[in-house]
Amino acid sequence: MLGTLNRRLLEFIAASPSPFHTVDTVSALLEQDSFTPLSPNEPWQLQPGGRYYFTVNGSSLIALRIPEGTPTGFTMSAAHSDSPTFKLKEHPQTTAAGHAYVQLQTERYGGMLMASWLDRPLGVAGRVLVEKQGRIISRLVHLDQDLAVIPSVAIHMNRAANDGFKYNAAVDTLPLYGVGGDAPSVLTLAAENAGVAEKDIVGHDLYLTCRTRGTVAGGDDSLLLAPRLDDLSCAFGCLEGFINADSSHAITVYCLFDNEETGSQSKQGAGSTLLRDTLRRTAFSLGMDEEGYQRLLSSSFLVSADNAHAKHPNHPELSDSQNAPILNGGVVIKYNANQHYTTDGVTAALMRSICRIAEVPVQVFANRSDMAGGSTLGSIANTHMPVRTVDIGLAQLAMHSSYETMGSADLPYLVEAMTTLYSKSLCVDNDGSLYWA
Ligand code: ZN
Image: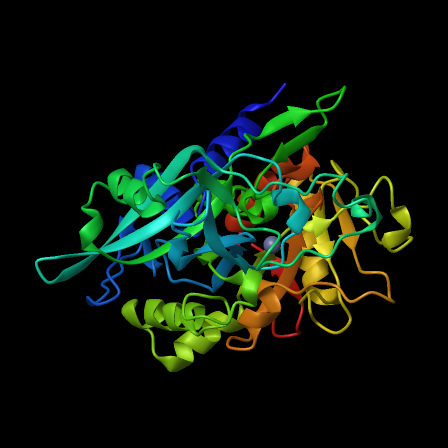
């Protein structure tokens, strides 16, 4: 049994083969729910009760719900729109002359498990920029067809293949696109798909996509398999909660950031001032001054939502013995003493309180103490904006594979928790005690 939420997640993932498509998909869902697009270069005149969103670079998005009364703070979540993949280079393919094979020219985007990209049908998605009558226009491209494959070297030619193999991205992972020179070029197909003339293309951001469809698996349907579960499962789960929530006394904020997989250091990444600038602009548009904005921040809460490593069935020794989540165990709170995850005792307590109200089980993640773990949005965003923040995620296996595994029961837990969170506002008493109202 797929279940309605899992089915909708798989549709969301299929419609979101690149960060640009993810933002487009989320924008459409927000507009269905009466959210109005804001223009960054026009004055913002936000109204009590209003619902707004805007996009940055076509690959990041921030949505806002303004309460009817005086706002008490910001209740926020942040997930990321990108996933590790291969990006096509500016000259994206070899020419056939003197070479029977036509290959795509790619470079790595993010830190993927390279072997998982081999021996499976691959598509291409992203955007092209075209110049028409002096104007530069962006068009989405989704070549949703079996276009290329990265073939393994046969075992007979590499007897050590099963003993560990070091992949060289300049040699081993170039996709095979055709044989001979008869096929239309990938840019010709992109132009057709975008409905533009190829000669008008003046720029592109195109990526390989894993075309294997998501599915429920396991003898008991307990598994959910799909590409890009990191982090589209959190992007979707947080969006559901954001849209479904009752009105809150806080300004509720949904963020989708690009470039998490490369460290968030871009103008549309969590490492930019984008979120801080947006919150300030929101407060000022509602008639507050700098002190009013700072007061809002002091009663705000951010959930940084990015998936967590589940204990691996074949390698439980890679996880901490006591702090390792499993699939279908509920929302995972992620900890790191060195603040690569932002969670501390206070923010964990606040998140546990939300999950208790939502009747959602909570589990925890910490790395083995002799392993360096990852980092994610929360701690990077905090460097620009001091707000109580917790890192959470859904437990998953094979993170950064082209085809990942999570539990089929976990998404509803995240949606319940986020719906509850987005219906609440954080209150801070003069004695320092905290509570949700
Ligand atoms: Zn992630």
